[in-house]
Image (cartoon, rainbow, N blue to C red; front, top):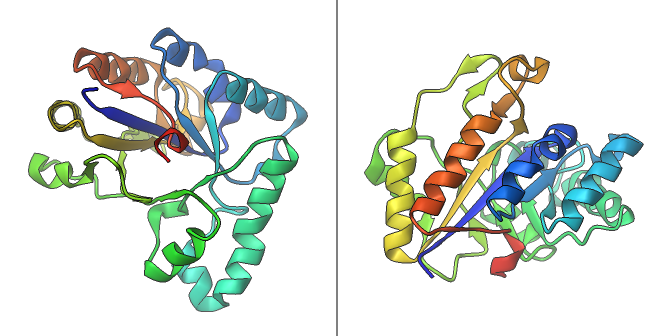
Length: 233
């Protein structure tokens, strides 16, 4: 197999993910959705999340209130952070019928101590990596199989708070090419999946449906498989 892409989405933009899930289905792609504030989902959003899971996508944990792990632990304790931020997120998603085996750090803040605590609860955890324009530095996020239980990942959002991110198509293409060459595992992350004209594009991190289509098509050109994080563990 020429390589694997773990495409992940963070936060709680369930309706946007669900609205554009047909793009994923058209490319036979499976992804992981990391949920925060899961207890605040509406009945409709819960039903949409269930449909995403039924389509083969993974539902992971992203914190009860999207708190920075290391800062919260420093201000309270490891036990307090787990009890108020991590365990309630697991409990809520489990109550919705989802089996939660992976966690993504809010803001990517982590250290060895938080890693060790989370690996007692999850099969894998995901951090973030700098969104550098340097292809050599960017390649460090590619993992040779089997991937480690602590994953780095590269952001692919096209904008934040209504401001476009720099165009990183050449870097991402280079990452796809090397992932295929090495039979590696590349983890990517995005947030809301919305059109440029959507209100959320002006208030959050976002990926457009058109860019998602382009990412999937580029990966296919290199023979890469898009699958869930839990499928690797």
